[in-house]
Length: 311
Image (cartoon, rainbow, N blue to C red; front, side, top):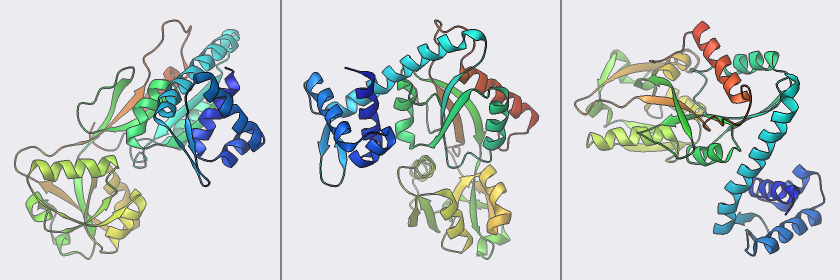
């Protein structure tokens, strides 16, 4: 088994098509197909299911993907340890982000400052689905990710660092009857039509959890895949929504929205919590890792810039 076999397999798993994966790896499609066949023959198991339109992973392929990513991550750690012996910080930093991260992290400023201090470090920034993040971090494919925390989640091989906590508020159009109020009971809110995110999104799960805990029904009239569309729909009177207060404050002016504090009986209304997920530090790597240096830069920026929301 060669390194290229792992690289080709990971590219195919992520792209979902032989054509796109071959272009990404800068090889001909037949070469990529042969590489995958060689890998499957060596493992003695089928890794992918091939159709005319796309490629999907088998159960064995899903299992092998995490190990393949971890193997390349360990190799990269070794390469960077050797290359950094001259005191120059080199390497790559793969970051995972949330769509609703902007009110809590000045990402452009953060990346600019880090790149200015460590110009030899390469970046990859991806918006990731909540469910995929822990496995990607554990395998080393993602070095650090911001993650919404809905409960007391813990994942083996993953370090969870609390970062920000924020209250949830209700938002409605500036022309909605609720604009006459500054707060609203959760029971009253349950009778409104909602503009929601799709069910797999962390914020949607948290809102669903709140209404379930309070034994309240609600009507989800619209389901959208991104925060910006949700705010746009609410501003145009298609329904109300529940969002973190920092997001509401940063969006009310541009979207013509009205914000309401949510009042509720016990149990206490849950908070929107963001944590940083990364791998535990390895003691066999000398000096500070790129993740540690990035966290130091983030902490410095957070001290100088007041983080919006409740911490």
